[in-house]
Length: 253
Ligand SMILES: NC(=O)c1ccc[n+]([C@@H]2O[C@H](COP(=O)([O-])OP(=O)(O)OC[C@H]3O[C@@H](n4cnc5c(N)ncnc54)[C@H](OP(=O)(O)O)[C@@H]3O)[C@@H](O)[C@H]2O)c1
Image (cartoon, rainbow, N blue to C red; front, side):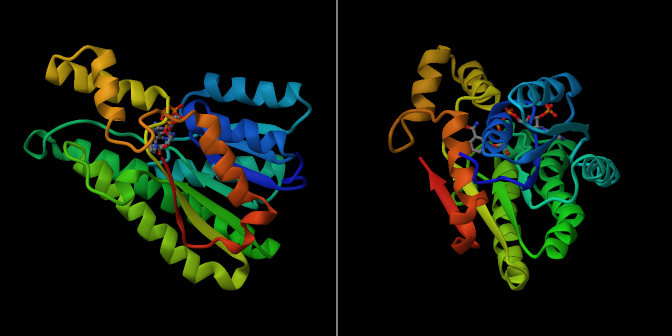
């Protein structure tokens, strides 16, 4: 597969989980990839795998909630790989707490990482896409972008906001041949899901196995997806076949 030959991609949260799978998949399809996140070691490991396979990659550290860190990371990555064609806003955090137990700092952090982070990255990278005559914005949203989620109001609010950003940019940027879409997965087997299982088990006295089953019982297929399955959906949007998909919420469940 080399559908992304001569394309450059910037992927947030690329060191582990879904972002790591997207980075490896995009690099496997021929893209030069910038992986951004807070954990340098994890990012370097992803870049090493890509380089061993003959690809091009660069690691840049940043907290996506901090605008200046994002702008610096994008500049550093651009200097190494050239301007970007593809942006994947994948970095995200969640939590589990009742509204009345949610402190304001937690609320703000969840909105900053999941929503503001995507805005900062779009702002930094869309000018590259306009200059190059096209591009792809792929936002890793959630089923929580489409329905409410008890005990995770900030997460659901941020992910609803991310979908609003996705749809607005789809309309604003279509004249530049830039598409903007969201992928909305149900449960995916990553650290985030493991944390949700542990939180549910701790709160309800269930075993981790029972908690996992309870979470999955809410979804259609009653199984967790692999990060690679999400990466394949992202690759479809990033490649030539993605040109006619714009402003969509692609539900994976
Ligand atoms: N797992 C699921 O069931 C599921 C379902 C629907 C949607 N999603 C969404 O999918 C995306 C990826 O989640 P995942 O399941 O792969 O979770 P994960 O395994 O917990 O990974 C989260 C990623 O986000 C990065 N990240 C977190 N906070 C960051 C920050 N402030 N700045 C920069 N990077 C940050 C992490 O990197 P560092 O820690 O190295 O910074 C890590 O790479 C998230 O947006 C999540 O909301 C997940």
